[in-house]
Length: 152
Image 1: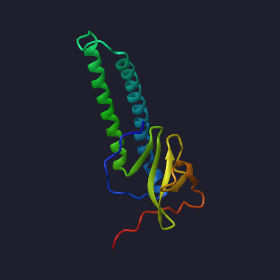
Image 2: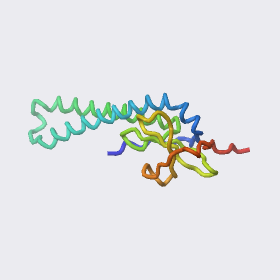
Image 3: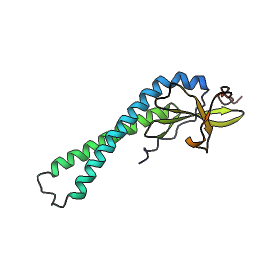
Image 4: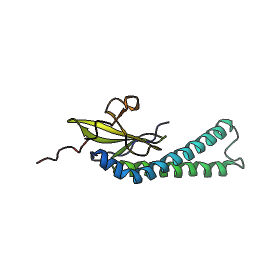
């Protein structure tokens, strides 16, 4: 299941150096997202199994516990959404619950993504906006990614 979409924010462009300077914070947030996503998925799986097996009327002794579990799931989903929103406010796009992220950049006069995955020591890849992770290319020789020109 894909993570919830973050709210729209003004697009920020990163150089490779700026993206790497932001990584300590991004790494912490993405680590929280990955852990929280696993927590939410585990709760959803457990609740789904209980709900599928449940054929008793709502007056059964477990209905209160089930309601508490559903409230817990909603709370954990809100935490996940808050982490994703925090990342989006930095101008970083989360591409999946395993910690893949993209930073907008300008390379050779066009918009591209600088690509980073949780566990990588720094931003070392880039790809075209429509290429996805399969189109990741090493930054070697392209470390000149720079911010978009400022309007005059």
